[in-house]
Amino acid sequence: MSRLNSYRELEHLRERLREQRKNITTTVMACGGTGCQASRSRVVIDAIKEELSRQKLEQRVRLCVTGCHGFCEQGPVVIIEPGNIFYCHVSPEDAFEIVYQTVMQGEVIERLLYEDAVSGKIAKTEVEIPFYRAQDRQILSQNRMVDPCSIEDYIVAGGYSALTRVLSAMAPEEIIKEIKASGLRGRGGGGFPTGRKWSECWEAPGDEKYVICNADEGDPGAYMDRCVLEGNPHLVLEGMMIGARAVGARKGYIYVRNEYPLAVKHSRIAVEQSRQLGLLGDNILGSSFSFDVDIARGGGAFVCGESTALMASVEGKVGEPRPKDVHTVVDGLYHKPTTLNNVETWANVPAIILNGSSWFASKGTRGSKGTKILALTGRIKNTGLVEVAMGMPIRTVVFDIGGGAVNGRPVKAVQIGGPSGGCLPVDKFDLPVDFDVLSEAGSMVGSGGMVVMDEGSCMVDVAKYFLTFLQDESCGKCVPCRLGIDRMLEIITGITEGRGKLEQLALLEELADTVSQTALCGLGKTAPNPVLTTLRYFRLEYETHINKKKCAAGVCKALITYSIDPEKCNGCGVCLHGCVHNAITGGKKQAHVINARLCQKCGICQSECKFDAIRVV
Image 1: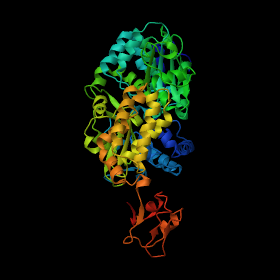
Image 2: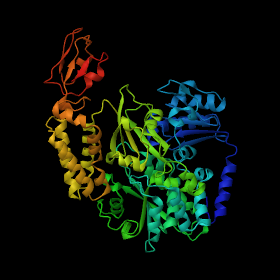
Image 3: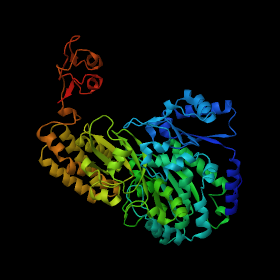
Image 4: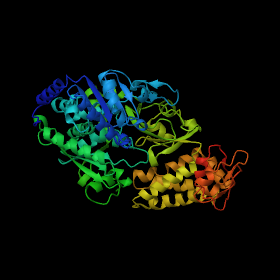
């Protein structure tokens, strides 16, 4: 396709592409996201493509390799339209039946349909599945409509219409006013009002300005930005273009971690396609607006998710934060005014421009508008990406969408917002997904990671895990973070190993409070949250570890002992043969015994025993 030189040419291209697709009677949408690729979706896609070719159906059946559909644990996922037929756990061997039986004959393959883990009901369509039914999928639903490597798909779906509107009919002040009125807040962690950030950057002196997309998603259990950038990179690009127009920037960067190879690849393809069509470069669509984007790959440092550290990395310097006496909207990349938002924030912008600020503001709560994508993981039946209206209770997300605990143990807590978030108990599950409410409770919406824990989780160990992660990822530039996290980790490690003292809990709280108040950057200031919330809501577990030298969850190895219940053991020998440390003895059909001196507390025997004879005390 040749360069587009006007808004009219873009609309003519859209009409021509739609006309070319009028003969398409069926669309087979196969997920090609990272999650489904791990389940061999590429092999499934190749098999379906080969079968369509063999049946000579390429002219009327379209195979669309899409981004993530959200329900990652059910992959590979295939959806067939019309009919919204949802097939899961698809294998290459199913390709013939899908093409011949469903595409050609219109018959549903029962064994490929989804069976609900809670009710046991079979769902024929995507909209019948409880995991999807309670969601409000504004951004994620667009993933299933486009091939991320096809700008034609994005244009057919209405892509770049919002860009046309702002270039043809809106001044920068009007764009900013609309974003302000929408109530959009940053989805990367801090929840800062997006319109206010854009306004300050637009008002900042200087002709050279930048916009940046932060795709350096480093939180354990979080992959929202990856899937949006993988699945619909043009949506993010269009949001950046609108933002650049609003603040007066001519240059932008997508900063994506190198551990996301598919996101890097798709972003580069999208940028190159946009340049070829003249949607990036000089005088876009014949206007006076010029803007271009480069891809910057991050090296994997967690701290580079912080704005000033990210900008230092883009400049080729060590990724360390700097004081924000002057905000980055005034003194940012290369000391020029810079607007930085994360992937999800940029992805919301085109819809706000097209549908209006009141449409966006109608969703959510008073202080938290729109929808939020959450990465629902942990000990829960339904894991994957979830998009809900802000204000939805945590309980609804965990039990209605997530289906509750996966192994029969009661749900105990949820950790929200990544390593800088906090752990909330079940009695706080009526709290809404809301920036301000969760912050008051000691947690945060953060990037949107939501890890569910059951009674098999030790909250002291959870705090230890996140502190270990943060210790490894701390840049070490400021003393509070560098030394404070080390000392907190020392105390908690001692508690998990039976060396803790009650008076250390007060010291732990004091340390956490000091770090949160004095650390240089936002990551350091929020690092103590897992400690503070577990002390606040699960203090009894700390006291039990210290006073009784016991871990009720059976996680902290120094405080537990494995033994075999002679009343339940039938001497089958499975645990004996499974123990790699030769710590189990006993004859055939005789109760076995664990030698505590040799036992390494690995838990293999317990997982192998079918008679629940292995006890942890």
